[in-house]
Image (tube, rainbow, N blue to C red; front, side):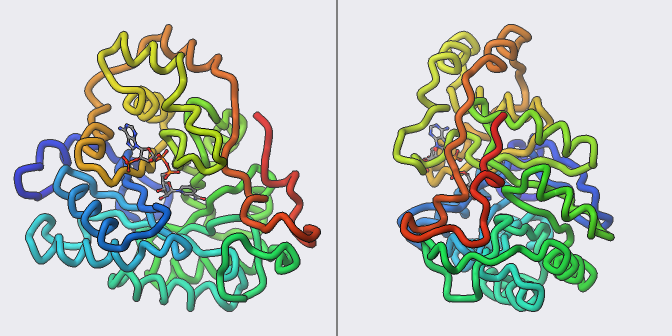
Length: 330
Ligand SMILES: NC(=O)c1ccc[n+]([C@@H]2O[C@H](COP(=O)([O-])OP(=O)(O)OC[C@H]3O[C@@H](n4cnc5c(N)ncnc54)[C@H](OP(=O)(O)O)[C@@H]3O)[C@@H](O)[C@H]2O)c1
């Protein structure tokens, strides 16, 4: 990997081959770009800093509003010679719920590529197993705008994106085993990746077992416990168990969490807009947790933070989204 002054860090990030013929292998730690409130210039600068310290894997979504600043940063990184070309990078984006209609998938991807100013995505994901009427995206959405999800139609449209070479790999996000069953029943190209909330406080053992059996790679969002999405703080960074392990290993809690995820064979998508923390989050590949550490982590009480039902306003009745389908217990 060519990059000025940072080749050693970049070269040290292992990569995972995806079950998708021509996809570039996925670097085992990626940078998340979701940040609220959105400040495009901050996103662009953070991505450039990340490229400088060795990140080659970036996660965005139509809904985050970060496609454009990520694309601006990629273009600038190529101009500045931080990377030789866009091909050195692994870029993921996601189809929003209002775009989960068979005839809207390809136009949505084309819009995403235009925002990013690139020719193809390395990975395109269905953001949620939730379909919302094709209204302008709003957050939270109105419950009465929920519609039944056409798993077969939407997935076949994702496959078309792949065949056209616009998405080197295709996958899903926030899908439970039940949703994956529906996609696999319709798929001629099975999903390469399922990106889900995963960290020592929400370990997703059942889902990981299922995905391993089906050859679906798991990627972890909120690997550091997230950005206080439910207003109750951060159960990962505030964990006494993880703090104890971090102290004993001479590492930070964030590094212990990311190392544990890596040891599970899962890719982390970690958000930081701070250069020191970005660097720290890559320094997890030349040391190991002990069996005792792993045992302690396996006993941490489990808590899910990101709930699909939070995408909808509190008023009104669910029409076509079954809340129980979205929040699976361990
Ligand atoms: N598919 C989905 O539905 C979905 C949902 C949520 C997120 N995601 C993706 O996953 C990415 C990551 O998840 P996330 O944003 O929820 O949270 P996260 O990566 O678990 O945590 C990010 C928080 O931790 C802080 N942080 C980062 N490195 C740190 C370190 N070494 N020490 C202490 N604090 C540190 C960050 O602040 P600073 O920036 O100040 O460092 C930020 O507040 C998102 O950005 C997005 O790309 C996907």
